[in-house]
Amino acid sequence: MKFNLKVWRQKNANTAGKLVDYTIDQINEDMSFLEMVDVLNDNLVRKGEDPIAFDHDCREGICGMCSMYISGRAHGPQHGATTCQLYMRKFKDGDTIYVEPWRARAFPIVKDLVVDRGAFDRIIAAGGFVSANTGQAQDANNLPVNKDDAEKAMDAAACIGCGACVAACKNASAMLFVSAKVSHLALLPQGEPERNRRALAMVAQMDAEGFGNCTNTGACEAECPKEIKLVNIARLNREYANAAFASETQI
Amino acid sequence: MTGSTKNTNYLLGSSIGRKFLMGLTGLFLVTFLLVHCFINAMVFFDGTGALFNEYAHFMGTNIIIRIMEIGLFAGLLAHIIDGLWLWKLNKDARPENYAYSQPNANSKWYSRSMGLLGTLLLIFLILHLVHFWVPSRITGLAESAVPGVHDLYAEMFTVFANPIIVAIYVLAQFSLGFHLLHGFQSAFQSLGLNHTKYNALIKTVGIGYSILIPFIFALMPIVIYLRH
Ligand code: HEM
Ligand code: SF4
Ligand code: FES
Image 1: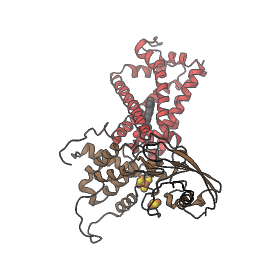
Image 2: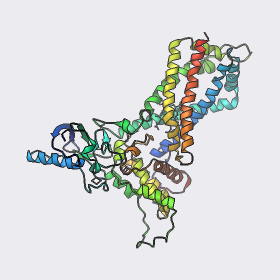
Image 3: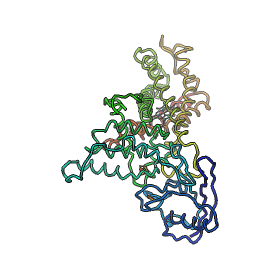
Image 4: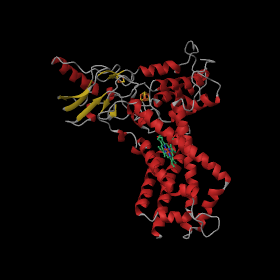
């Protein structure tokens, strides 16, 4: 297969970037999008040019590193998939494909397609954990959790922190990510002691990082590779209301 | 962690708090529109306008309603200021836009255009207040056949003699309809009321409201224009 690529090239955070045209040929339809970029980079290196910088790690849809805004969509046109799980057969031969980095004030560009998602780490550090020492793995039924809650917590825990929700949202809001992390722990007994503090602290950090305000457009849910649902955002809103207006917790 | 008071401005000082305010004021306006629509619908049932004038007289003179009117202006103002503020904050959250984007693949255009639809509504509201609220409450209107009762219907009759004004009123209802098509269910989501038991109801009532209320409002200027 043959493609015309328009890739965002930017030296570093302080210089302006621009879209650069590349053409690439002899791409196998079963290559992943990242493998296609590997081939392109190989060509560039052979020509003595600077290869395109992009993030990746696991290449199996679990690490959340491979952030790319492809053909106007976060992680491209494949529903429920990261860039590493997007295959070239999803495109038509001869397609023109735009490749841009995540765009958000809170995700500054490091180089080309690489952005700094440290803001997510700082949100987690603000409260996305349980500080009680849990010791060794317990006997499975020691701590009874109702099946329904366990399922919901597990679904929320599937979030890989990829940032596609922020990238797709017109407001660059991180609500889906934060709501997944808050929901995951709020639904389980282990999360109970720090429940109020967590909701307040993580939301405060999210705001401080400069993410936008959620307006419920649903773009995040539609683009999330792990299919995290909007109900989590409603749950976060409830958790926040309870912590802010009903509990005595202050941060 | 304990005892210290870093940020206690949970309403206006946080993104979620600002959305609570947005949802609360939005639903408050939704309630107001229902009453407003019901009262104005009296013009359909009485071609002389006497029935409408009677209801309008009650709304204009009843002390409880007059106090609520202050609340209404405050709520509307809070909604507008908070809305425009959110719009600005959200624009700032993405300083550089995508060169190529396909937002229709993941969301509805009207859900992304609440600020624009709201601004159109605001422009319409100013015009609307100048047409009816200002003469009724400030500059004064002529008496109707019933002594002591304003002839607000006559004012309507005059305003809607102009087909351009009629067209503006009808078009404004489209802004309202789309604003509510997203806003109605969005307000419940903002308030954390997204629940498997009630979602279908919220959705259905929201769609019904967003179509029916603007439709009835749009019918009023048309019907009155046709009575000339
Ligand atoms: C009678 C008039 C109006 C009604 C019934 C109404 C209703 C609503 C409702 C129910 C919401 C959803 C709240 C939420 O998502 O939590 C909303 C949001 C909003 N409204 Fe209004 N509104 C009206 C007028 C206006 C006006 C005049 C503006 C002017 C600028 C405006 C701007 C906005 C904005 C920016 C949002 C937030 C967008 C979002 O959250 O997606 N609205 N409105
Ligand atoms: S909620 Fe979904 S899109 Fe957002 S960071 Fe988590 S996995 Fe990625
Ligand atoms: S490289 Fe790990 S999710 Fe794509």
